[in-house]
Every structure is written in C-alpha cells, then in structure tokens.
Amino acid sequence: MGQALNPTDAEGHLELGKIYRELGESEKAIESFQNAIALDDKHEHAYNNLGLVYTDLRLFILAIEMFQAALELSPENPAFYNNLGYAYNMTDRFEEAIAAYSSAIESDPTFVDAYYNLADAYLNRDMYQDAIQYYESALEIEEGDADVYFNIGLAYEENGQFLRAIQSYEKGISFDDSDAEAYYRLAHAYKKNGDPLMMRRYLETFLDRAKGLSHLEEEIRDAEQLFNR
Image 1 (cartoon, helix red, strand yellow):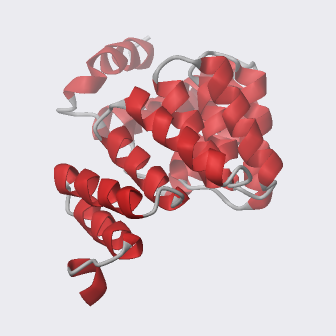
Image 2: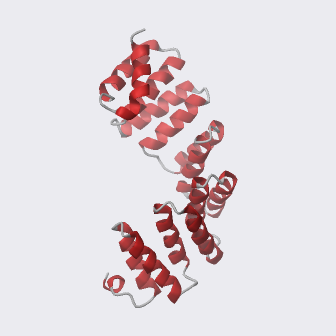
Image 3: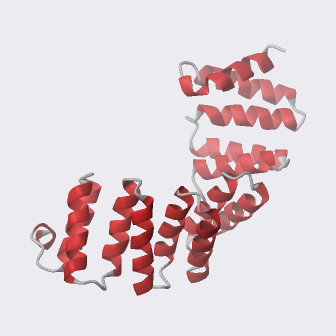
C-alpha cells in the first residue's frame, strides 16, 4: 500500500490506479495507468486496467485499443480476450465479440466468465439455442448465481423447453427470491407448459411483489388480465 500511494515504478502506479478505480476516481486512475505505461510500455496489465476504466466510462473504442495492446504483449491471457469481447459487444461488433470470447475459452477452457458473456451475447440477440449451449457449459464448470438461472430459464422458455425453463427459474428463485420479474416469467412458463393452477399461484406472488415497481407496469397489466380470466 505504501508503494502504491507513493509510486516510484510502473508497478506502484498500477496499484495506485487500481485503488483510484475502486474509489470511482476515474481520471486519477487513468493518469496512474498511463504513468505505469510511460515507465514500462510492455506492462500488459497497465493496458488492461486502463481499458477497464475506459469500459467503466463507456469509452469502448478506447477500451478496445487498450485490450488489443494488452493482448499483443500477452496473447494467451483469457481475461484480456474476455474484456475485449465485452467491449466489442457493447459497440455492436457481434462477430468480433464472439471471436474474442471464443479465444478466451480456447486459452482457458475453465474461464467461466467467457462462457457467461458469450451466452449473454447470444441471448440478447434471440439466438436461444446457442445461449443455452454456453450457459450449460458454464454451469458444468461451476454453479451459477440467480441471474444465470433466470437467463437460461428465459432461453429455455423462448426455445420452447418449458419444463427446463420452470426448473431454471425455480433454481434462480432458490438463490434469490427478491426478483419480482422472475415470478412473472415462471408463471408464463407454467402457462405454456399447460399448468394453469401453478400459473395463477406465481401470478399472485408476482402481483404482490411487483406493487409500486414502475418498470414492471406492462407485466403487471398482463398478469392482472391473466389472473382475472
């Protein structure tokens, strides 16, 4: 910590930059990482961390340049590929994002974040079977959190695999029962699976938990119509 606060070499500036980033001091973080690069222009982690700050600021073109610079120095680093994939994805460069995430997985087949990001990219483009493939691969490596099960549940539901969707939504709720929208999705999965009793049960739960949540107004109206039929 002392060296980070009084940096005299590239590593000290790198550590100081990380501290500034954690504190939300983006300009100071950028300056610190740039100082690290000025002292050692072969410091791949300085480029990567600078890219992360640019990502925080949604300056994705600059982030891409930094992640590419990091990869030129460390071409087998899966985290750098994963970060590059995210920046590409956020600029709608989908094919390049897929290639970067795939390179992360090739570099380290156990790098689970790349599987999740790859699955999310497919899910957001309604490519449900591809999304399912990578969510399932990630879950074989480690158990996911609630959001993972909600996302794969949506992919299963949109892919017509309603029982698998139900199982995934319920697994997600077992991790986090505070997400009101998950009950709405679970109710719809039961409806599509031909179980109106369970549908009504989860609609009731959703309507109770969604009270006052303005971002779910459309879902609330739909749930009320279904429940009152």
